[in-house]
Image (cartoon, rainbow, N blue to C red; front, top):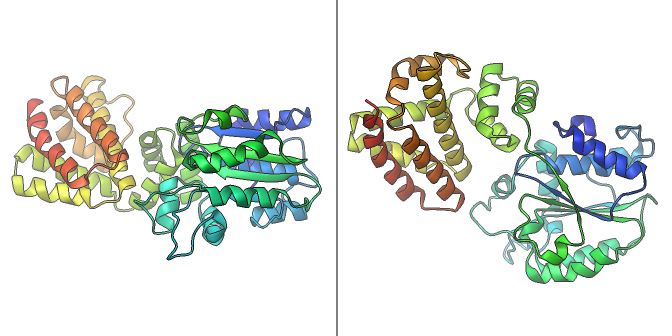
Length: 376
């Protein structure tokens, strides 16, 4: 992957290149930022730049043997560590046991989350770790001679999933790495990482992506309408993974819209049978789609308020949404907007923490019957 293929993050790209050119490259960097900010593609592009035979001032050449090996994820000096669900039955103990699947996913969609990775391996809902066997494998790989005579690069994705035993074993090699060895820790959240690990890495903050950057990516990559892309970009809140999931799952059938309409009509009618049916339909979605549905609902509430009080200014709606809001928006106003957004935000919070979906959404739809009518 080249820098030109990475969405946005121009300031971070410039910083990384500048540090290399000025010989200020730290042996251990932590690229820290929110999920979906593109940290892994950014790291891959930098790795290719470092191993390239003929880099320009701003990017790798993309054509030399080293670039081609990095792009195919087969370069002998490029190593990966990532969380896996350890299973004796499936003979999975370290990253190497799922390297084929890892390479396939990166080639299919370089922007993905931990949940995407687990779902790809049919392990969603299970606990992935970077265990002590992984740290032994890291030390073994990095003890080998460099193939390219440039750098040996170890990319550790989601180091927050590293258990204490593995982290402690890595401390020494992070403190005294072999010559021309670089560590890149690609991290969503540093709170669960040992302070001793943090102290040995230079932190590079990677911000969330801008809505216009996500919009451009969606229109160019998935050929969706600009209006749909803008809606999904706004819903994603800077998370390209959520935007891609939403577009791939719902750009043709507008499933979230249809489900939201069904939910609101049932809530207004206070029909208990219909409400429970809708509740079960939402609960049957996977966790990421449940989160996206909640974000979609918040988006519609926001657009309703804009339609009511700003006279259609700044609206970001598809045709079918606009037609629905002509009738629905009047029920969302200063009488209930705060409580509605609070309930949806609370639902999102609990989904992220693996709450029981059936109980969660049953409770939410019951509350909606009161809140929707409160706006009348």
